Length: 147
Image 1 (cartoon, rainbow, N blue to C red):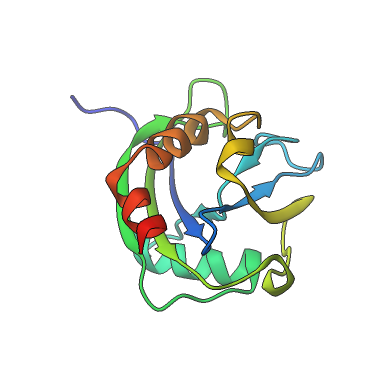
Image 2: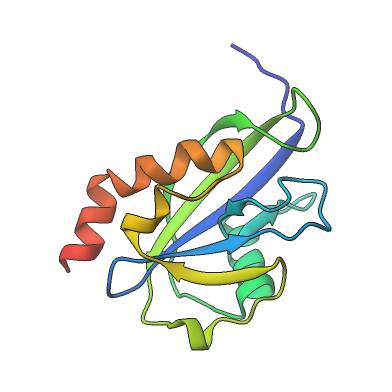
């Protein structure tokens, strides 16, 4: 199946020592998923690979750096770019010892670590509403919180 890809997005799931996920609340000034939760990340620039974009976007949006990101999933998902848009999403993850005090909210209304139990009550954009629950149920997440 060859689907049309309208955008390429790299996202990062950072998990702290308490198993909380770093999430961004988008502000009302964006046309893409305003007032919804998402992962730090964003568009992959022309000629840039997904991993480089993930590192770049993480730094731009949070002020954080991690040495190594591991791919969780790369797939086609709904994009909020325009109705019917399809994005190729690459979602990476890593453990972090960062705290909310270390995070700089470089974009959006808020950027903070959210407890796993609270994640289910958040309103995510369409793509992240699929990815985040799968990550929380994954062996990769379990390995991070068991370490």
